Length: 434
Image (tube, rainbow, N blue to C red; front, side, top):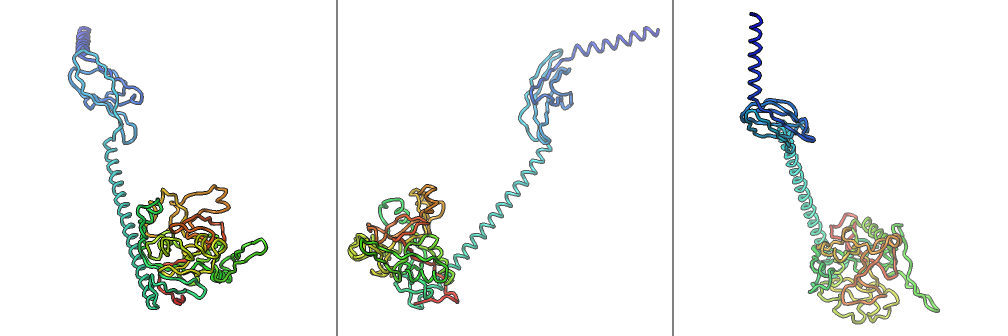
């Protein structure tokens, strides 16, 4: 009896097992490369890792594979699978690109929020900085205008006004200065080159003070006497039988290098409390004509005895400089803006392609405009090149304000300088007036 009972139980178990196997189906899920090891689930129930063979029932179910690539990112494959009864099916799973997990999405959203907050803070800080910068510029401009207005009032009280040609000195040893009014350079239409096209756009926005003459030996040697400047040699003409010295005194100082000129300007500035400097190319071109629209300070032709140059029909032309003021001043009271000695200005030599980017307010060229016009070996000896204006006693004057090239470390018997300064009120220790 017991044996029969055991047989019936075993038979029932086998029948149930054989019946389930006959009705089931087989699903094979394959993966390749980095996708191997992805977790496989069916209708949300974990089944194992890919690749995987598994038994499934007939019907439709959702197959999902997930492979984490980072703590917050995962790759996913999802497919709805329809299976018949007693079939075998293979699915080649190719997981998609990495995407954020639910936690990753929350973390990324928070990161983006923080980044956006940081950008807003940086933008606000930049706006505040720019507002402050503009405010400081406006205040500086307001102070400059106030100082200029006060300075002009002080000058006017002494009969000095821009353009009237009357002169003053900031100290007994200082160069004589005249006031030059603001304005625009005479237009040259059509412009002959990029330089003229740029100058046509320049406006000198503010009045300034300019040396009435080129700096003389007497003025230079006042700086030498206190050890602030180096002495400059006297000019000499060597003949067959005699040697002629040009003398000093009211002769324009010659042979200064760039560093010498800067030392002299620094001495004047320290002595007077005013900011002395060189003219810019645009300022020199503007001031040389004295407000006229003519090609030259005195007219359109070189003529006779208007300046000291080789083609000026002057007795010293081509032989040596003349004492400053030997010729009539232009309409603003400036002498020898053409001829006698060439004058260094603040500008470096500029590539023609860079003129369009040059300042339009009369200020000098900046470093990004400068042209490298000599090889390194020459630059080591001569220094960088800069602009020289006005022609000299040993050159011809052409049909305009002469522009040429000089070098920082190369002093010449044809080269001198003229000073300028911006207008500011009289300092307590700075004497004003002539």
